[in-house]
Amino acid sequence: MATEYWRWPESRWTSPEIDWKAGRIVTAGIDVGSVSSQAVVMVDGALFCYGSLRTGSNSPESAQRAMDFALAETGLVLADIHYIVGTGYGRVNISFAQRALTEIACHARGANFMYGPTVKTILDMGGQDCKAIRCDAKGKVTNFLMNDKCAAGTGRGMEVFADLLSVPIADMGRMSFEVEAEPEPVSSTCVVFAKSEAVGLLRKGWPKEKVLAAYSSAMAHRVVELLQRIQVEEDFAVTGGIAKNEGVVKRIEKELKIKALEPKFDTQIAGALGGALFAKALVEKDRGLR
Amino acid sequence: MLAHYGYKDGSGEYFIVVDTDKCDGCGRCVSACPYGVFEIGEDENDPFRETVVVKVSESHRKKIKYSCAPCKPVSGKKSLPCLESCAPGAIGHSW
Ligand code: SF4
Ligand code: SF4
Picture (cartoon, rainbow over the protein chains, first blue to last red):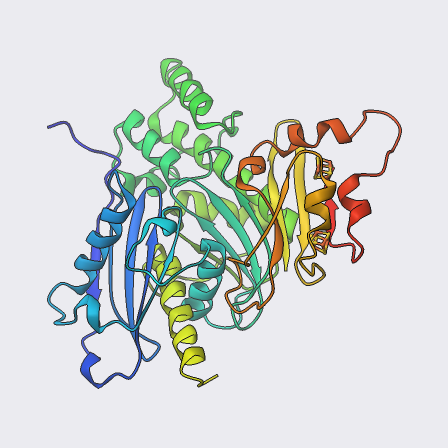
């Protein structure tokens, strides 16, 4: 089988400290994105377990797989969960979720939990879209902008480049800094054109590192333009798969002259985490607790 | 909440901005817009909002520049039906 350079690691985690049987409110969030799917389970508002997988060809099945993956070996089953919120591109197709909410709402809420109440601006770079979000100290959205018109600043775009350059996706960030001087960004923002531009540069004899640098800075520039529309206020955090690509994140920081907060969790789970937090708040509302 | 619907491309920035705190969900903009750009529904970005809110329909978000083009003559400022219909002034255009 040919090497799949685009393939990123799937992951799961269970808290060693939490006994879910002692919990009063068990909730879950499921984020079915265009590229990856995550399930997060929380017990009384604390992170209990999560799973992150590649999205398959259909959303309902990907939701189920992510949930099964997260719950594996925890002893907890779907019926033990009091409330499930679905989010992401495939959110309306999750049959076992009680409520569907946008990624905008869920990412803000999830980032608020991950990074704390000082986070005011969130950039979510997902598989096929990119969102700039402003929120208050409680993680409530105050301003947002979403770009899903093309795959330029997204995970899918990075996967295309991983394949084109035969570079494993996890090495792309590091490699993009192995240049003597930062090249001009590629001029196309559309991934299809950026790809053909890159092919041309490779033919001209540019090393992979330089092509990567040119692509990463084009991507960074594009999302900075989106961020400027909603105006960045610190603290600033990046979520989603591209948050793991230092080649893009560092270039965004440089252009904004603002440093992003260090992630404490897997940045891909922010949306599902926010869903699980909303689920808890919705259960409390139902039970008359708030 | 300021909800930006639209995109930026090589030719410019095309966003319809809705201030959801001002919008009361009356639906006048939906009837006023000749091209069906708006719809009313629950606020998917805020599960605790009790009232409905306006949003730009999914089908228009990626082509809003073209959807609104007939309302926006190249020369001479004409008022837009959507802006005129909205008493609280919840709608804005970036271009
Ligand atoms: S006319 Fe204004 S207040 Fe009424 S639904 Fe439209 S945006 Fe909201
Ligand atoms: S400018 Fe015209 S087409 Fe565009 S939203 Fe307003 S009324 Fe509708």
